[in-house]
Figure 1 (cartoon, helix red, strand yellow):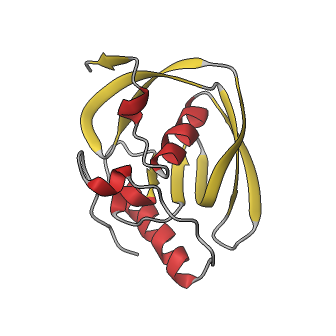
Figure 2 (cartoon, rainbow, N blue to C red):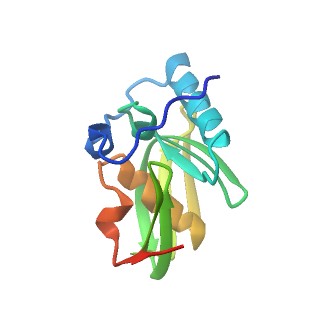
Figure 3 (cartoon, rainbow, N blue to C red):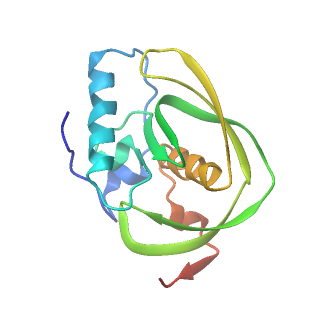
Length: 151
């Protein structure tokens, strides 16, 4: 495993739509492991999308709210409710905003072995799912801001 370099602020890869993974092989598994290692070596990290470490593939790792996930080609298949959130992002240090997110989100993805999984998250985990999956489409949390927050 390796700690990868995070991409910050105006790095153009953060605005690119990531490509679908067509084959889950050892290289994809290594990318996921590297992403998780990077997340664990970054202060205040809850999750990481692949483009945040320069990989333009639809991969996300989450280690948050007692949930450890390595996701390949994740997509939201359902959401309900509404909540006001305060969000930050590893790629935008020291910037925080309020957003409106669904209170409950269900995602579908493949795990690192190619098995299909479905996971439902509520509250903070729902926010996390939305935030990370939007990264894969080149959407950043600042695009969803309703108010800047000073912490």
